[in-house]
Length: 335
Ligand code: 13P
Ligand code: SF4
Image 1: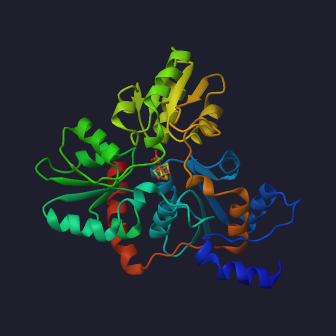
Image 2: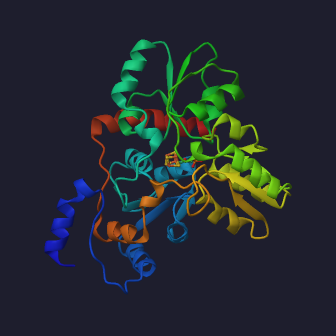
Image 3: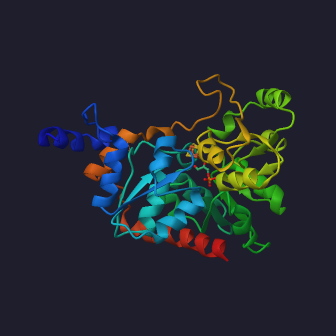
């Protein structure tokens, strides 16, 4: 690589969010990534919403909670996070001495963006007696203001661990929060945030899809809106959904979550038929895809491993505070 081009690309990293470098046309990304994994003692952690080629080359594919546990225990010099920013940040919070890279720093999350630390601080001051439970889909600054974190797979357990006489602020996902209120009988104060991917499902189109496949079971992620969840026979996190499809005798499923999950799900149940829940907008996949998750590509993954940038950095004072609610979550969740 021409050092001038690399210097220029590195200088532009803050503006662009990723290394914008030309690579030879014939480059085999999968081969190069495998080579770099060995050479650098690197581990690739990927979320189920990543594109199939990335999931296939990852060392571990999982849901948010599994990825947090994995990040806490990895024995690698370089952690390559094929997911979104808050996930890579959580890995860095848990591994301050390791280098954590993310292929594209622009890979954010609509939930994280809906809850800024300065706003949560004001809200907390208005409700000083409340325990603050935040979804992991938040920035390190927001975690630093939280009492305990949760993911979609342990949210009920985390909320149930809080004494009944303690009022709770739940941020930032109002849909997950409303679902957990229903499940636990609590009356948590809900932040007004939502996942753009799970709010994109159309109930009318979902009913039409079910009419075309009347034997299919509808299953949904709890970030979906209440009217979608009402139609679901099972509600769970991404790994919960995969396990349900694996263990349920039904042969057809309509899956209301980000379409990337179908890759791993179909591998687990090659003989079953899986249909993605349809979104309002007609798009190429007739499903709902996360534009943030899909910012990561094989080329960006290769470049970030080769040059070890962009790197995730969390100021130590914030990191120490953010670690407390994450560690509490991991401890309670593993009991
Ligand atoms: P889980 O992986 O915890 O199911 O969450 C889904 C999600 O939206 C991650 O951003
Ligand atoms: Fe955020 Fe939704 Fe994308 Fe997950 S799917 S990263 S919650 S916007």
